[in-house]
Length: 245
Image (cartoon, rainbow, N blue to C red; front, side):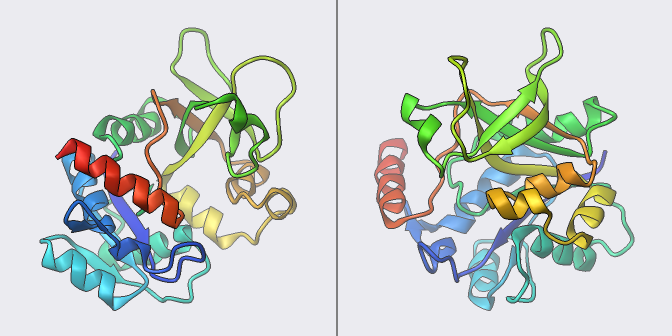
């Protein structure tokens, strides 16, 4: 595999406008994510930016960024647009889509996601899950749950479904972490398809992939990376950065 890591980022986030440029520990959040991705050494890294201000911030920090159409409907569409500009000859046969709001993501999480594409021949899309953080996760619609089947002795499972709903029974649940590794052909097929019925019902785009017949595998991380979606999340991330510097 010859993967590239792409980080979609835009300023017009509904719950936290301008969040890619929000300062965390002296650096814009998107730059922190970029540096984490570079440290993982999975492949070259670039930001797929929806705004010129993001491009400027990334380049000022010595990173690589490409400006994409701000009207693109999703991060998946944004990384495909960036991929076509950065790699028109198709040298990269896999793409890791790392969200720009995970400023403390660990290198081993990205490595595990990318490794699934090499280790599982039938894996079209790789992703990550983590154990539930608390019993309250089960009833929280903002916590996406992955329903997986695990081969014996494996730390990776094949996804059967994703849902925002509570799951029946007493077994642990798996929180979905929004990191994806696509085979290039799978990314092309996924973005070319319209939103599917289950995707519209659950508001989860990964269900489109399952309805298309694409195979999704998930690696298990020890814990979900800190994600910044709200002003409260940003305050918590800034506090955490102060403890790690």
